Each structure stands twice: as C-alpha cells, then as structure tokens.
Image 1: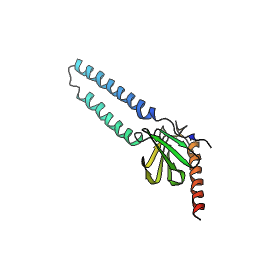
Image 2: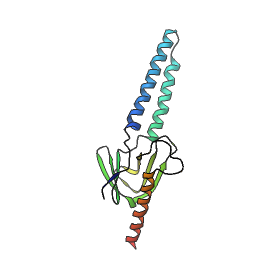
Image 3: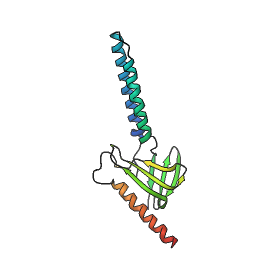
Image 4: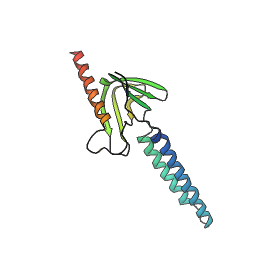
Length: 161
C-alpha cells in the first residue's frame, strides 16, 4: 500500500496570514500617526492600539498555529511526520487520542501519543479538506484516521493474546 498525505500545508496559516495581519496593523499605525501629527495631537492611541492588537494576535497564533507540523503521511500501520527537515515514524497503535477541533475556520487535529517522539507527545496538523466549518462530524480524512488507529490497536491487542 502506498503512503497517503493526510495533512494540508500550514504555510498560509503559519506565514501568509500573520504577515498580512502585521502589514495591516503597520499600515493602520502609520496612517493613524500621520493623521494625528497633521492635527497636532499626540498619536499615543494609534501606537498603543495596534501594539495591543498585535500582542493578542501573536498570543492566539502561538496557541493555535505555531505548532502545526509540515506534513503527515499515512502509511500502512504508521504515520510519517515531517517537520523542519526531520522525519519521524509513529505507529498508529501508539496514538492514544485524536482531538479534532472543527469549531474554527481552519480544522486542526491533535494526536496524543502514548510515548513522546522526537517532536513531542502531541502532534498537531491541519487535515486535508479542513478549510471551513464541518457541521455534524469529523472531516473524512480524520474519520478514516480514527478507524485506522482503532484497527491498529485491535491488531496490537491480538498480538499480545
């Protein structure tokens, strides 16, 4: 069986979107400061406002997007995770929990591992087809992954018997 890619590229979420927000806030800061200076007022609000908004954005970005891995491939009985030039193979049976967060604009999946690998004990990724809201259930890729993990665990327990 050939490997199947199950993650989408995090480039937009990790780089393009934050850069766009930074450009927007910088433009807002420069234009507001110019207008305030032209009217002879101090531009304290136009400096504090964008700084406050960028601090909030950075905190949210760090919590939701900074830990997304580059690629995840589904092999027969394992996941191949590629991130920052490293490649880690994780057995499907060693995945304890699959947390599928669908209540945001970008779906995010967090895999909790029984034992930590080189990338940590949690692996977060954005699944293929995960753009937009998924009302009423899991993404098809995530649902397939859950079934494959369950089958791998079942097979692992049969080996122990």
